[in-house]
Image (cartoon, rainbow, N blue to C red; front, side, top):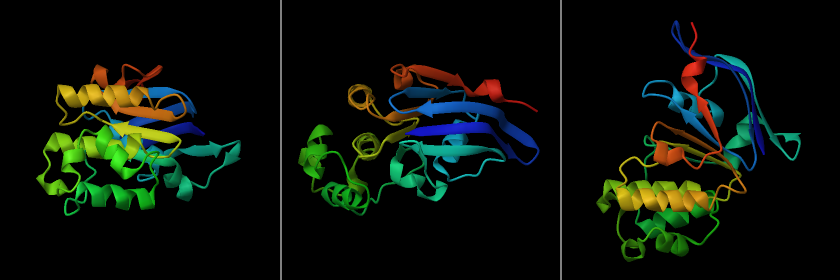
Length: 205
């Protein structure tokens, strides 16, 4: 799996958020997209996913040397971000089973609850979970998803030390056979990444 960026740029109004990004993201590698708050990290990730269009440039998705239609790339991506919401009217069991039907997990929903340390909360409504518990559930949908591309935006938001350690351990177990891209300004979120890309370098008028 590959994502190839050719001269990608994004502008809001008259302001360019970034320009002239040429970058190949390759299967089996991990990349950190770095920058201060407001530097465009989330915007960059949403362009990769296809939620936002780039102002200029082209993105090519390839799998086994075949180009994937941009409209179908969502099938290859597992994604988590602070602005994504859970369906809080579901119990954990209902949510994991529902998600598993849409985009299969590597493990059974029951096993995922155990990996989360939430087996005792399996039948509880998500609306009654703490913010940290909800974030771990969101991360689980991406980390344990059966997708070749893993995209994480500020992955440890709302996590305590226990949650951060859990995230680091589980992420390390997932890096080998996936293309992983992490947008962050916290070193403990991306220290395991092989490549670091400073978004500020592409801030041009």
